[in-house]
Length: 330
Image (cartoon, rainbow, N blue to C red; front, side, top):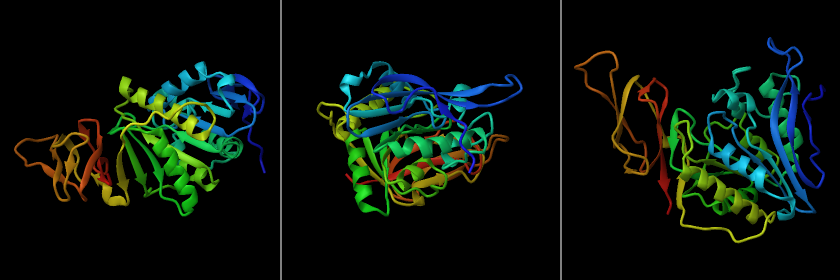
């Protein structure tokens, strides 16, 4: 089998604080012997669990990179029992371009796992992370938000899994993260996701959606920062008390949570994020964008619940996700 060409410029198993890169040779028009350089920090001290913390799986999502950059710059080895591996911008090409998908090969990293050692740039990055970093981890936290096209209520999530012992551990970690909302999620299309690969390897996995609209806010970054601290304490890697506040419990049990646009046009939301809606209730209207005097198309909720996410651009295309409605469980 072909070896993955990615090499870390720092040791992954030596005590102390080490900052460097995952170096992937990449010959291109503007650099014949160039490389893709993905920042990585490893902080290790003594025997204990390993946490793998990742941001910018999608390059236009910013809470994770901000909070993880701060962690990498401030966490000392003396504060750690075990190891923390930090990839603030795991999809560095997309992050540098401010795009969801890689500008090099057009691939969506979160649909490209477990990757290939002889594939495209994104596939090689996925393969290295899946085969070299995930196996080291006991706990994986992958930060997401809505990017440039969606906005979310700030939530942490864990998945419904076949292995109920693993599921319980993931749910406990999600609750420890303590976002304002906590979501029990059944993915409707999990093929190629980082989540799926991590869970397949039997690891504890937590993900988030902390906002969106192609930016980060003081509130959303504070949620990310607190969540990291809580999870590291929960895992026994750092010391302290988990900072716990009330978290609304939501459930995403099937694809009836999603509403998709069946017309293109100018979208008018009838409710803001966090509003309670009923099955059959209109969530939004889509007005024609190319003529006047025509009635709008109504988009309705497929279940009772909370408006948890919405489309951001004022114009929407047919097939775009218009809204997410999650059910309240508490």
